[in-house]
Length: 212
Image (cartoon, rainbow, N blue to C red; front, side, top):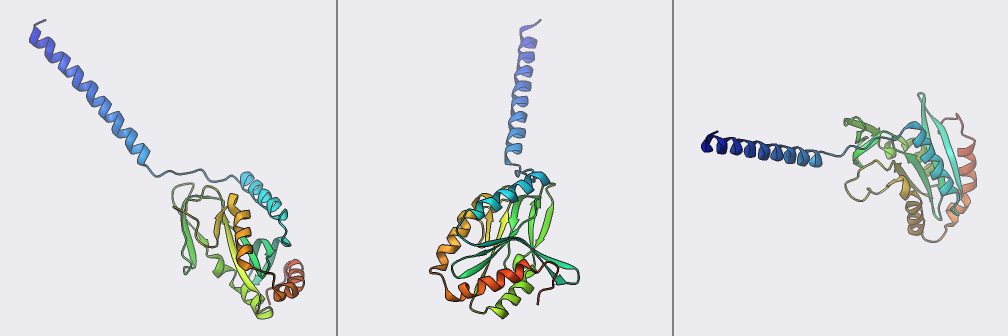
């Protein structure tokens, strides 16, 4: 084989190898930069997470109710995972959907919050302040001196692109969030002391009763 032809063949092989390496690098970089999509929780994992949260909250020193359900009219049921008595406020705890698997877009003024689900598409959930408005109004009308606070707990797969917004937390941060709210309350208030027993009794006995 002539020397020139042999050199051309070597050059072609070298060029082909270099091209393959470049292609592999480009593909690797593209995969690395692709938005990370986490797998949503299965129903079993989600229920286990709810149970773990419940046990952790029950170990705190604050009285609470678990799994409160109240009919709000037109077939709508208000669902609360916990109602917690803090020093001078009532904390209403709700859960975000289990299929949250990516970025969460929270807007306190919007009726719906958006998030990326396990299929990589946009899902929606009601703004808790809006959906719980009938209950909040009912509590305030009867106990005007009691502060009402909300906490929405998201699965670990939720991506807030930084610190969770006010009134939101990941499942592993719920205890810390409750303690921070309690510390923010300051000393126990007489209004909360007087309101808790009738309020907790009303919520406990609500069952299917509509919000007054």
